[in-house]
Image 1 (tube, helix red, strand yellow):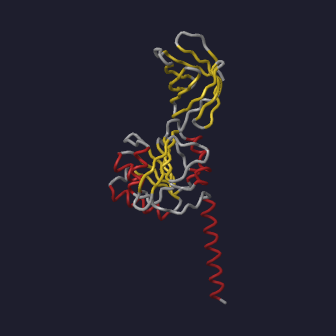
Image 2 (tube, one colour; image 1 turned 90 degrees about the horizontal axis):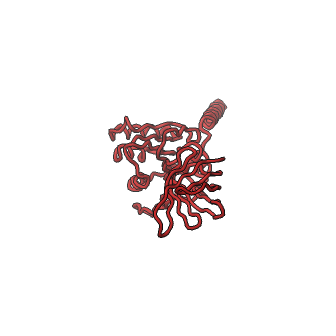
Length: 264
């Protein structure tokens, strides 16, 4: 009876500990499957990582992506992992690789991680987790931030590029996005010295539709870079706050200056 009581007490204590851990880390339980080293490197190459970047790996596992970013590209990296044992493994590996000063690992729920300053985000999660994470990425990451997901897409958020990489055992897919600026609304558009015309844009992720005067508009964003097709014109520019500056081109005609100012 004493042994049974002791066993029951231990079980209750373990359950309480698990409950406390889940309250601290309510995020998803994603089975850790290591990304092959070659695929990790290709993820960073797809994102065009440089020494100027701050790379966040959400669900960082044993830390290999963050360590590769620091070791092979000179970047700074932050790994976010819910398993404390893997966080410890990652820190030891960073120390062994000589990149401890540029590779930081957090024992944390990725859904509460502060992504401020990230210029690249890498993921190897699940499709449902990506979908749940999507609003946070779009809300917190600055326009132009690059996102690479290993094997899992973002549902109806169309990737800007998909790359297939051959690993030791199978083919892997890398999905790449650039966080778009917010262009939806009404603008006053001017080409060259011509009169201003109303430009109305509707935005779905990086895709744009709308109208420029009487012409239908279709286009897309890549960070703050915008490209629109309207009638016979192609408009290309860069958004800075509520102003777009760039050029307008048409077949057989010289390029003209294009500007747009947000009206609403």
